[in-house]
View (tube, rainbow, N blue to C red):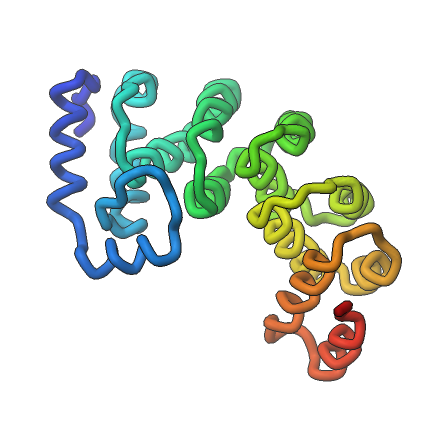
Length: 235
């Protein structure tokens, strides 16, 4: 694949490859948990990640500039390719284009977990996160929260994370689920600070209860802690 320059004919061959690697059972499973406007072919994620690595050895920009990406797997593959880019300016440029296509949790969460470049350029990406959190679009806000979850749960960011969660007054399900997920991992890593915050916050009832539920799902939390936390659930 190294010699591929990515014209429309070459890209059509890639789509054929994706369709040949469709798994019917996986397709039906995916359709039950992933709600997207894009057609789901049913290609397993490890195959897409491996394919992305091969694409990154080719003319990446030509691949990313191809517009006719019509399936869930094509969009997800694009995200994985972006996640592998080593040049931070190029990575951020195409990531900011990619996030506008996201319409489900999977396109958000799986791609962000592959964005290891964030670890090297935290200040740069943190400025972008603040922009994402101000978006009117549900999944762009989720992008900001999931970036925080993956790369910023550290002592020096903890108070800012709590402030962000307190001030993010949104009703969308995938935003509130992301806040709960974020806070649950904060608790696992910084129990005392997070517990103090959970006892005095401006979160809505859904987020508080879901956060506690997610914490209690963890095997790293003792039975005694879980009993204490469950008393904080609001009705």
